[in-house]
Image 1 (cartoon, protein in one colour):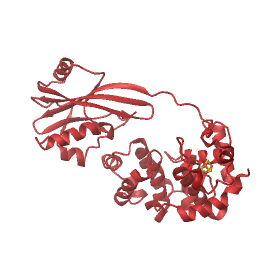
Image 2: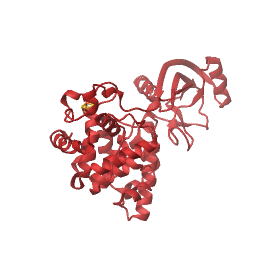
Image 3: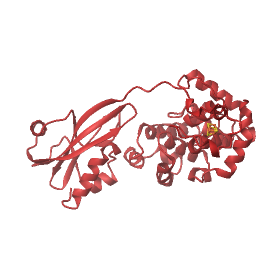
Image 4: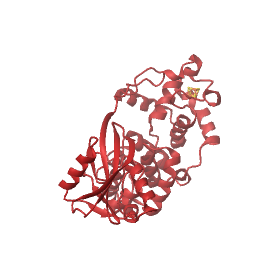
Length: 352
Ligand code: SF4
């Protein structure tokens, strides 16, 4: 089939079915950029409240460029993949210095900003500036390979570039942003992954090659993912009087610069924990297990076992915080949510 055949039915379908989303209401370059970065690893429904809060507190590039790091992380807390937020701020600083506090209206210039790859540059260019640049993400790759029954391996960057060129060739100059969004929308709501395409309601079912062959699930072809590494951890809720210990993570690597409950590699026994607490300069008063939790990152899984440990005195190596301070000032990532909730529950009984 000729790929250009999809343009008319897809745009007509998009005009009738596009979801009402906060960033679509007012597609300024700043709002499109923030929404696209948030949507990279997170579902639309989860992003909506974060987006509203973010743009109301940091309404433009200047505010973002000058945002306090802890405030920025707090606004991002729960979305995960925090390097996205750090790159947003770096890019805003660059845009403030080099482009007068605006995003450049040029695909190649956008690509130079931290955190903006070909997909995001294409989305901002086409949706906010009307430039006919392709925005090809996983959703779009799935639709294109299915519609054309293309067995190329989309994990190959050369194949991805070829797909981008195919999309570029069919973008109608007057509606490039809508066409990109229509492709994404079809992939997100109809041509679904994991065995669930809704071909019966698809506007492309008459021309889709995979539907004709009866094998949409064969597409897209990609490399199988490597198994995630499992890391076991012991998480300690160290409590002294009304306060709980937290510490800042290193500035590089996973969850860089965020706060966490002290934790140690491996599953430790009560006795090993007592010795470690003493090494940190504290005396343990009591210990009780609080339960196991799991958190999945892209390449690693944390399997955590938690303990509430009451100690006699504070150690200067940690920050000793109340519940309010942790909620308002110290961004603790959702990887520790299980233990944050335990502390909140305990709050009813004692003011940690
Ligand atoms: S007909 Fe089915 S496989 Fe083809 S694009 Fe539509 S949902 Fe996807």
